[in-house]
Length: 307
Ligand code: 13P
Ligand code: SF4
Image (cartoon, rainbow, N blue to C red; front, side, top):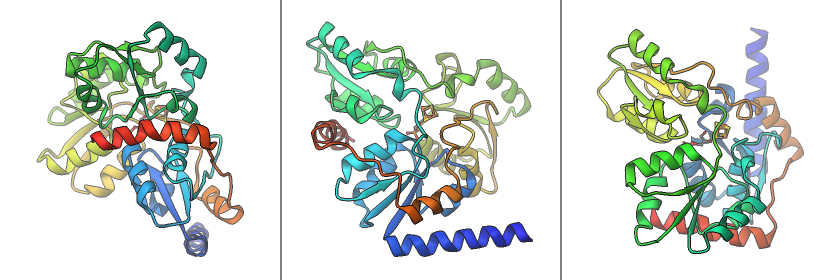
């Protein structure tokens, strides 16, 4: 009872402050349920970028990881982008440095450089094209006429893109430490328990896992796929946080995480209390210097033009 009252007060304070600050709360699909519940919009990286770009709010409270808030700031420099926990980082994004990428570009001077959105703003400033898990295949397909393509930093997403497009890519040795925790034996076990379930897997998963999936999809594509499919049961091959949203949107369907180990600790750093404090103190702000921002924006704009 007391817990309910505390929760209600928290919700109310957030709502009031959100209005006062003219703020919008954006949350990635992996966020904690309490965060998803107070968000104005939840989605995958691409949807959140698009949402940030079109919001009329003055302040964006970004509940996700650092590169996502940076992307919002790159797209809307006139808005104040704040993160409830500035230490929420993506380990994959930190697996490549600017000097690593410059070296790779020097080794392949003719190559077009495509980078996953899971990269820092400084890395995006070095790219020709950005891509997300939703449109990586489309972006590489668009570059058909190009002789060489560098694709960084996720080697498993790159491998998946190569399998679909037939295009050989120059890759980097990056990966998502959360998605690689989903193992082929997890899929095998869940399929045994739920023989009628469809298996969905995120392209950051291991190739052996992807080869067992009925569909390889980004998080929001999974959410659309579930709605559009008659099937009643799904094995969810991505970070466990998505299951909350899937169940909320589809109460008559059942969802089984492929592995309970697939938890992204950084995505769980943001809490409802931290959202309130962020709105009270109007921090921590995420800002990108103009020089980096303008160069990074070119790669993002090129992606948004294609898909
Ligand atoms: P989505 O774009 O599919 O949401 O993926 C982002 C991410 O960080 C996956 O781990
Ligand atoms: Fe980065 Fe993986 Fe976490 Fe996504 S799930 S934010 S790729 S560490």
